[in-house]
Image (cartoon, rainbow, N blue to C red; front, side):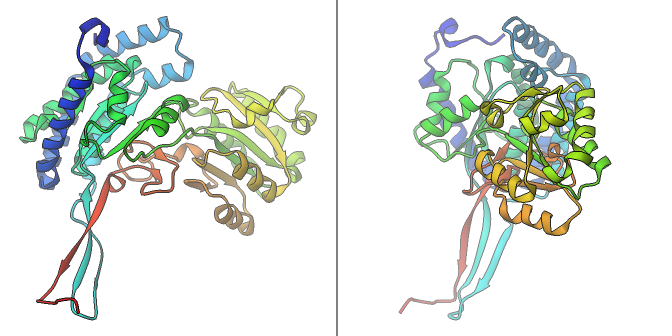
Amino acid sequence: MLKTNDETRIDVVALMNEMGRAARAAARPLATAPERVKNVALHAMADAIVASERKILAANAVDVASGTENGLSVASMDRLALSSERIRAIAAGVRAIAALADPVGDVIAAWTRPNGLEIERVRTPLGVIGVIFESRPNVTADAGALCLKAGNAVILRGGSDSANSSAAIHACLAAGLKVAGLPETAIQLVPVTDRAAVGAMLKGLSGAIDVIVPRGGKSLVGRVQEEAKVPVFAHLEGLCHLYIDVSADPDMAREIAVNAKMRRTGICGATETLLVDRAAADSHLVPVLTALAGAGCEIRADSAVRGYYPAATPASDDDWTTEYLDAIISVKLVEGIQGAIDHIETLSSHHTEAIVAEDPVVVERFFNEIDSAILLHNASTQFADGGEFGMGAEIGIATGKMHARGPVGVEQLTSFKYRVRGSGQIRP
């Protein structure tokens, strides 16, 4: 098992600065590595993950036992636990990233000025990325593979809950880098669980880190946003909404609502608040809530909803701003699309919102007037995922508006530079 700094008496700051220097050195050859070489590494990583299934499961068993002993929530345990199926999915995700087009060197735009200067905007790697995450050992592979494909070095700092699982997966990534002849320090995992490592990363490791990506709970992301001295791609929480309009197909509304909440309750794309058009209360509300309850969901509702469905628990003010990550949903009747927009724009974390409706005017208002990273029509919020978007995988869902927004995949892990070609021009 990994040990904390107190157990090993490691100088965490010195360790982290050395990791930063190694990552910066590795970033240079990665930036110019041919796509073929990066793909060799990625496929070798996937092969190693599959071949190491027993080792990964054994390491995960240690983490799961510790999580149970420490009283982790049901949602946290779901994110932490691995199985043969999940390990195969992790490997498949790495292969899917290898199949993506290499973004590095892609010409985003090109134009010629009247003076004959030819200008191109070209994608380039960001450099060194720091990823800080909790509970999800699969992020080790997703983040490492995505950063590699985009030509970046990465320093991964997983949570103590998943330390052993992450270390077992990281060993497979290092093996893949070695097969391809790339620096093994291109993907590094912080080997201690001391929180001082996070503090050192947030300070930028003496200029080594170019951007931080946090993936975890509200307290982690809040700390990162507050303390980071380098740019941050972050979402604060996934407070996702589903709105059912009076024009919605009742059967579709019921199926989407159950899937959006109950498919996996512990992911950031799970619906947490259900808004129902007051005009649809007689036709849509009770069948949807009955289906949710039948699937094991606890329903917390406003007084208007309880008038139709007395079995619901009264919702408190806090329920409208709570990311449950559990089989709980808050439900409210609203005055049509305007009421839904007002509620979402006031209380959402601007992660993902969905509408079930057949009225095209209502749908266009939803798309145009709600300012969240992902908006869906007649589809479950659980599609808020880079893999489902065809990105291969994602590091996370960014809810900010600068540089990256929505699923952070390979393209979002690049910046750009300008290439200007002349034929002797001088500026008058």
